[in-house]
Length: 357
Image (tube, rainbow, N blue to C red; front, side):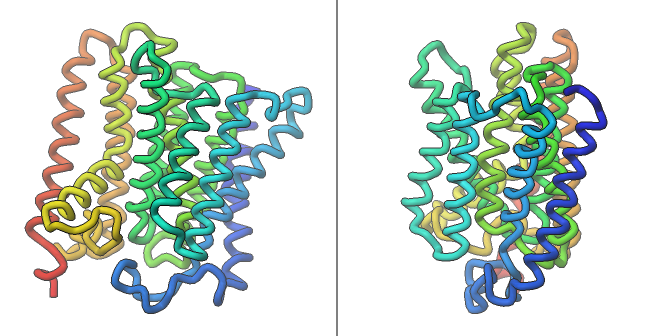
């Protein structure tokens, strides 16, 4: 299945799945999935909005599987170990997030499930190939999955931010696969492009001022899937190309995830400095401090859109440039990352919630 029409079909499936399902969900979401109205200490938005967007994104994922099996009846996806473990992990991450949206599950339980998701991905055969010692590879893979699931969950604190950041992350993974032909058999490609379509469809509802949130069901599912595809399609380049080092590939991954990594590191650093728990939510993210600095929520969205777009382009540039100039490109993208970190971190020190009152 290499017909471009097939890719368009799966992309449109994701778009229309989100459009139709979210319209339906909004029609009966007066009480279902709405954030607690008095929970304004942690939540940025003081108005109640349904947190149901993750459901439509996950249904789009299931729709892609069904459509793929209809188009290719001779291929049994559930006979493939990698896919089976991915499907279980993705479903587990989604259901855990859905439960958290409804019942506010304990952080320890969430962490345990995230660890299980990371282990499932590794046992399915998709892991970061750091050394020849499998247990070390599984350890780093699990840590990466847990980090990204939590980072995207933490970044989902303002209208449209996680959606647009994830859109560029998944697009980078897809283009990297097209460039290096890491996986050409099709199924994962079509799942990935359906998720991209779902994010485009969801942004219609999540663009500031948002009509709905994706909720933890969405951020946990997207975190798991983005971690998986970054391992499969970016770190996986080391399995098919010998002219690029593991360090350069790792740098490309870090650049790709610039926004969630910087936000998480900044929040954790500031909370530890202020002797607060890093695991308790608050209005102290990089997005919030941009608002305290005077930017509107819509401008903050476009700032992160620009960061996501630039990160995607620089990551792909680093991966696809020739070996002779890759060293200089690595210096360029590293400098850019440090500059973005400095801008966002310094802003959290200069402008904070107290100064904005």
